[in-house]
Image (cartoon, rainbow, N blue to C red; front, top):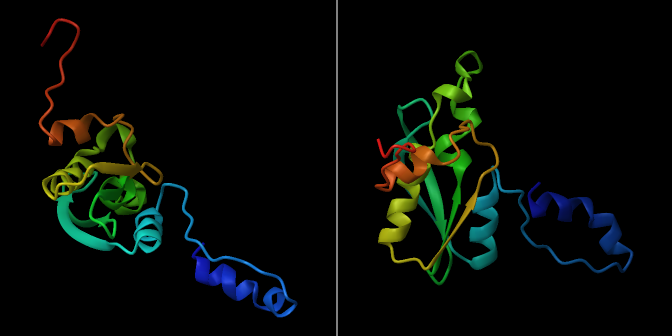
Length: 143
């Protein structure tokens, strides 16, 4: 829930001399990037990436106000909401697009990347993500 909504709900409480501090909060899924950007006076960066079913989708990541940290939601590139209910099969989806979000953040020179994994459609344990970044996955025989 956005902090503004909570603050509105506290309106009556605040009139009774209660003190509160409005801070952004998220659970790692949708809304995480916005919360982190707001907390650090940062900005949103839009990127076209590969969605969970292999189609191109519009996604985003956040940069902190000092541009030293990036904030990424798996849900932005590899999210459940991007897959129609009839096509939801986590064995056929990929986290590749999440890797495509990480690359421009690295190219921007950030020193820290925080990835929220909530709201994801993929169960490839990040295999697609690391392959998008150039990793080659091999089996026990090196193949």
